[in-house]
Image (cartoon, rainbow, N blue to C red; front, side, top):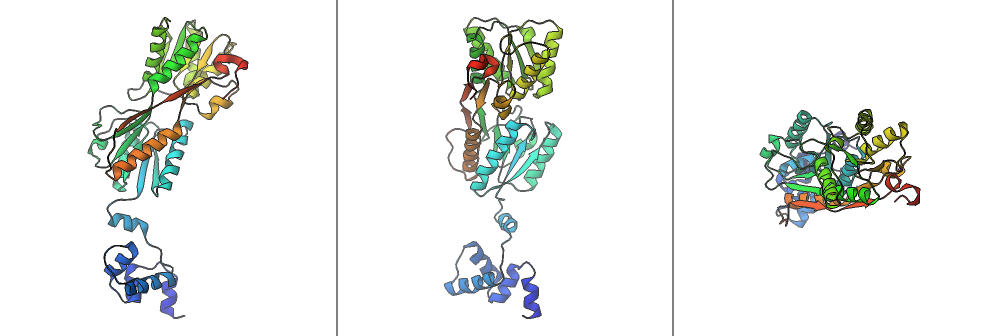
Length: 348
């Protein structure tokens, strides 16, 4: 083997070098590699022979840049440690990979400024589209000239023309939760929900109130806990605060399953039996709802369907195909477990 050939074999071959070795122009090499334009069968064989001999691997990033569109989707997630969000991201990533799109995952920790930085970064990477699992308002989105889809949280203060929104029927979910509690005899229902302007929590509470009104159950404003954190600690402290104020309640509607887990733990630590004394309903149906020490009755969101619907709409938008509706509201389901019905009902 010649020294020149050995050097070529040990480095990444360029199209310029393929051109020299095959005896055709760089433009012709590019047409053969990309399968565009005109070239003879003989020319194709010459170029492919060099490619095969030297194990040429195309620079996909460079090819994408030349096409002015990166085969990549950016995904902005508010809290990757939250199981609902992390499982959603996984579903999105799998679906996009099957369609030959890579993903860039950006975690914001619920911080508006960090979300803005991630948006700027993704736009600089020339992504084909962005999926946002957040509702923090940002003018950057207004200026972005690419398809953007929102999941779970409807943003406010943003021009939503030609933007995709995919969400669960939060009002129905709250209604189903309220109906479950009322039909099981609850009269004084407390609630703990996310109160941020872009969150779905207040829509879920709206559904709960709708059930109470229809079924003649009073609504107690002093039993509504508004929070900006939807984790275990917020649920636990919410119950502690109600008990410290000697509030009387026989049910608790929780805007997420992690809140419900905190609520049940606090009730247990204070000697209050669930569901005999207080019945609890969560929302999302993450794994902890089924496998916690007290399986949680919850509202199931179909994460696979949310992800599939979002990806389908986003790719159609990227390809400029016709879309019947940019706003999709997907159905939810009540999953009864021991936090409302005791040991008689088997956990689903």
